[in-house]
Length: 342
Image 1 (spheres, rainbow, N blue to C red):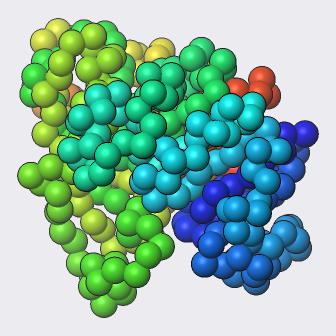
Image 2: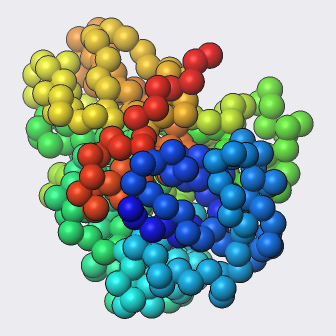
Image 3: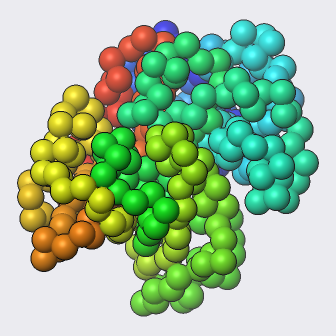
């Protein structure tokens, strides 16, 4: 069994980790930390877990995380970088679901996240945990930087085109929509029901924190700098990411065959038949990314549609996918749920 600790178990990604891990046949959850909820039964706060977990939230100082095999950080940015080094020294593997180790350029990270990095020495070692690209690196990693929700959908959508070298990487466009849970569980005015319901808006157009992460990933695939226009939107639903991606073709190929071949052995990427349009509800509650590729009017523009559940493939599910790889388990173990419909 893998003895697991979760730091920050009261947010949406934390409870999603719990929902998935309590049914994982090779996992034993040893500790769930929360300073604000210490001493409270987990199942009292999250009643969907009644009958599945009998732990209480513990204060991080009392959690004995160094006795775990793996610790997930489902915390705000800036927390994991303060604790990861001591856990690694104790032989504990770490998966950070926040952004502390995603961006290799420390100055760039500090610019976008507005704080000094507390552990820059680990940046080089951290493996970016997008399995469809870095599976072999994940296998031997001690420290995983779990990708963000927007970056997962965008990178998986663009990946086959960039690998094949058939698009102009200087003019990429990602028009992406997210459900409100992507903003986290904290109370903020813009996520109130009366503010977010029956409303649709773009935000972060001058710059969003996920932009440098996406550009870094796409540049690594292309092996040269890429130029990306990224516009996120907030839509009135709880879960889901829908990425509409645009690129200019510089070479004509069978796009459908390209995508089907690239993802034919990927358990969590589903390429839809030609002419189809994926829906966010078709991946709700699952670790699946569904993709469709179009070439409207046989022009030189390719349009890729990529949908995920931001809390699963965009966060907790992908973290468990990485854990399975790290511990040499079947990659789909514990995260092969059928999406919820309707």
